Image 1 (cartoon, rainbow over the protein chains, first blue to last red):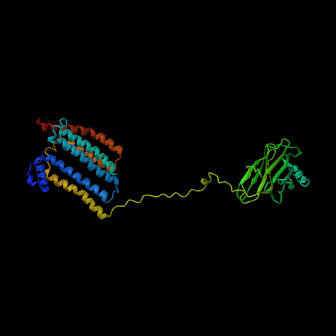
Image 2 (cartoon, rainbow over the protein chains, first blue to last red):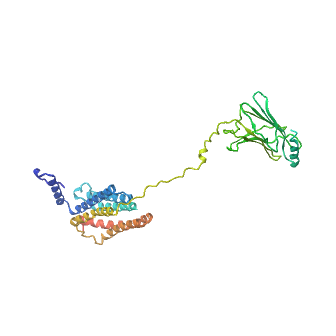
Image 3 (cartoon, rainbow over the protein chains, first blue to last red):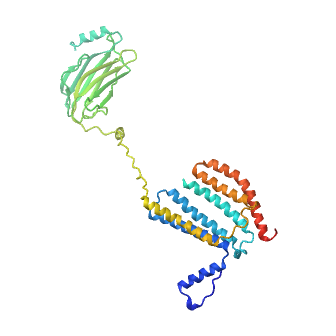
Length: 121
Length: 274
């Protein structure tokens, strides 16, 4: 998604972010936004859990491990799903159809969740 | 010697297979050879005054082992035992007896034998004669008390320290884990749950419409994925790992077929074949 060209005089940080956001929301399909929202959620959740572990306590350490690693692992899986189903990356993943990517995502998620529940205690 | 002869005869008459001593005698001489003390020993009572030797004195004990007929006997084992009652230290000195039953023991203080126990306090040692033979009754006679010059204390045995009770083992445990205050826990739970609101908010705006989620070709796949998640949740609640692996393996079969059907139907639709 190439950023829209903006006039040089109006490039302030705020404007840059605005134009970046505008370009993103204009040029990104809803399906990818759907995944992006999920990625954003995972990132927030992981940050909050990590901050809790650092600032308050890590007492149920296994629970922290399970929760944090589930966000990290799910983020990786979702990010790879996103990159594989992105139509712009079609040339890079010629032999990987979106369906195949989703099957990988589902399988990987199940395995990940198995380990996460294993840790949850 | 004549004084103990009746006692010897008495002892002989009491027991047939008994051994006795003939003319037992102790002599203490100094370094020049002059006798300081010389007296006969008795089997029935020990010498009244302790025998004291010092410097380069020599203690000499002589006797002959005889049977009831007065014939010399060579016993199998003959020892002098030096025993300190206070420190419980003892020394055993073997004595050589000739085939005729004659025995001589020399204790030269300038060359003390190794078998002498240490006498750090100068306490008297009880000197006992022990005779053992397979053919006769054993004999144990307390002869006299022996006072030796003070010696160094007994060396401590290298393993001595292991013969004491060990100090009690005190376990130290890590402090009990503390839960944060309820308020902080509640706030943190709220913060951790907050991303869900963000997710649902974002999804409500951008979610693509699920067009065929409940069509018969896709629904089984969705259901089997849900079944997997339910199984893993049950694992958390109470299943054993073996059960989970077994049920998971069973559940894999329909999931694979349902997934193949669902995804190929989606793929066909995407490619415009259907």
